[in-house]
Image (cartoon, rainbow, N blue to C red; front, side):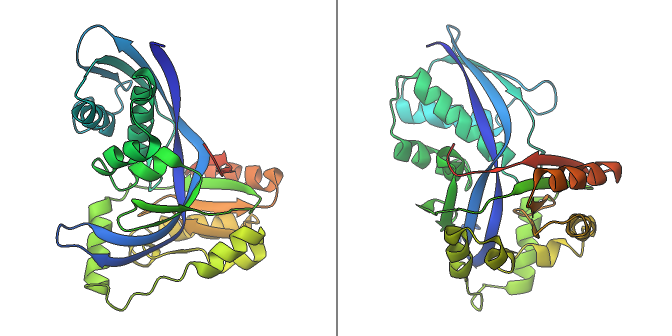
Length: 289
C-alpha cells in the first residue's frame, strides 16, 4: 500500500465543563464528545523524496503551523524511521468553529501514516503521539462517543442510543480558543467552585431518550461566547423555531448544533439558516468511525 484516503471526522460536544487550570496553562475538562459524519478527506501517498508535501488547495498554510505537518513530524519522531509523504487535504469541516477540524486532520494523518508504515503503533500509542499535538487529537483518533477528562486524553466509551438528524450551523467570525478560555478564566478564576454533572445526560443517552437528554446538554463556553457572538443565540433560536429538540454550541464556538426528529425538519432548518446567510450542514452522530 503506497496511497490511501482517510476521512477526518468532525466532533461536537454534547456536554462541556471546565473544572480547573494547570500551571502549564492547559485546562482540565469534563466533556462528552461525539463524532459526526461531517468530514475532511486526506489522500496520503508514500513517496521516495523525504519530507512532507502538503496541498491544502490554498485555504490553509502548509508549514508546521498546520497540525497535519505537526502530526507527521511527531509520528516520525516516535518511529525514528521517517519516509516521504505527499498529502492532499479536501476541506469540508468549517474552520475555527469548535468542531475539531484541525485535530481531526492530525488524527487522520497519524492513522494514515501508521497504515502506510505497516501498523507500527497500536491505537493507544497513536493516542499518546496525538496528545502531544492537541487535546482533541486522541479523541479524533478513536472517535465515536466518549466521556473525556483531564485535557481530553482520559477517555471512556459511552453508549449513545439517541436517534435524530443534526444540523450544524456557523455564523459570523470564528472564535479563538485561547481567547475563549481566557474569558472563562476571568469569570471562574481557579474553577474551584465548578462541579461537573454529566451523569444524567449519560443515562438519557444510554436509554435513547432525547426527551430526558434535552435539559442535560451543556456547554460552559456559551456563558462567555454568546455575549460577544450574539449570532450564536440567533442560530439557536432559529433552530428551535424550526423544530429542533435541543440546540447547543460546540466547543468554544461559534458552531451550533441542533438535533431534529426527522431529516425533513432538519433539511428545512438548514435551508432557513442558509437563506439567513449562515453556513449550515446536515450530519448524523457516528458511534464508531
